[in-house]
Image (tube, rainbow, N blue to C red; front, side, top):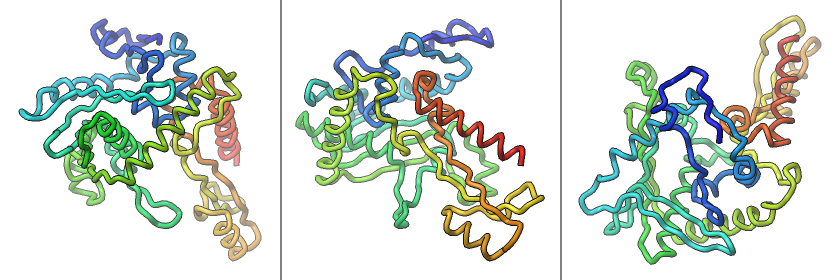
Length: 306
């Protein structure tokens, strides 16, 4: 990967944020497994041509520093454990920050944003609340790796250090995280391990199946993997720039238009794939990402013109 330095920052900082390829040949890590197969393959395929600037990777320094400071935590704990398990022709790997064998507790540290915590708990179409799906999958893959290596895994704990926490906002807004540290944990059940093994085998199968496939023929990442926002249905009024009201479904919006009558119309605001837009380094080589970004830009232009 090429690391540019548009702000002419010190060499030490450039070196600190310059990454090596995340996976060795024939291996795939727990954090890579939870990414889209297309993203994983294109990132590996075009690694030497990917580009990022030092100024865009500053928070990576904080993450590395946090892990370095906590390496020696826990007198009876094990830190930075590396685990491996063969699945088909691929070796699944995982590096666990902290593990207490006596209690079977996995602990992982995150340096993240308040937004990540606030957006972590979401309701599905049935009203069921789901928390931090990527963290949960990562923790369960670690638990599965421990089990395969004959070690107990009963609980996963994620400790998030909120790098942009504001005490002022916490006092003003009770829905805002009230501490600079947020903890998410869950128990590991037998059913969870069975489910995550099915997920792992499915992702390894996809990775092997499409590794030699042409770029544009690799299936696109799922909406969840792309961090796809939902479409929004805006009820607009002729001559007015802002929406009268926003709805989650087209049916609700059309019912409102029928109620309001003449002069009102529907505007569909397509949800963006936030990872494609801001965080996926291989987006320049991904046909879906390019088409998606262009179509959203066109939609923005239309909305501005209206």
